[in-house]
Length: 204
Picture 1 (cartoon, rainbow, N blue to C red):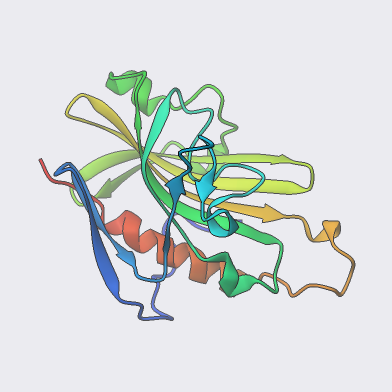
Picture 2: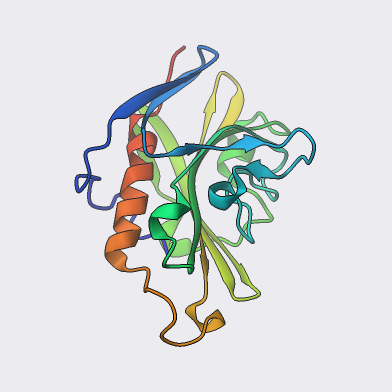
């Protein structure tokens, strides 16, 4: 489960940071540890490599988000927690919401989301740009997804930054056969992804 909106900074590991730039529109820094997810040309909706970029609930795109088109998706490598199968996937992604272009529609969120009111409704400034924050969740078939979603209007376009973490219930495994995915592990994963979120900026 994702923790606070702004958890402890990612300081436990000093992975080299790289820069991602999208068509002179936006850029952000990301840890060299993260995996670049690419949508399959043969099977749209499937993100590769699937061992880090796929889960029961999608982590690279938002099916309930009013026609979102994912511009970039980076995943924390699942192999780092291969002994903790309850951890399925965790990503940072940037999407453009194609079907809306007004501030009211954009900042109203998607009617298909299941929103946690305790983690939603606030405004966060990221490098001088205000984003509306939503905490969204989904669950079923012993699987769960928690996402922190940040929306803003820029140049009459609606942008959505997301950190998503997908988990499987420990009850789906035989007792004593798996290693626990701990709060420390969760902090490590989310802190790494938030480096990208906190460094995000528009270029025009």
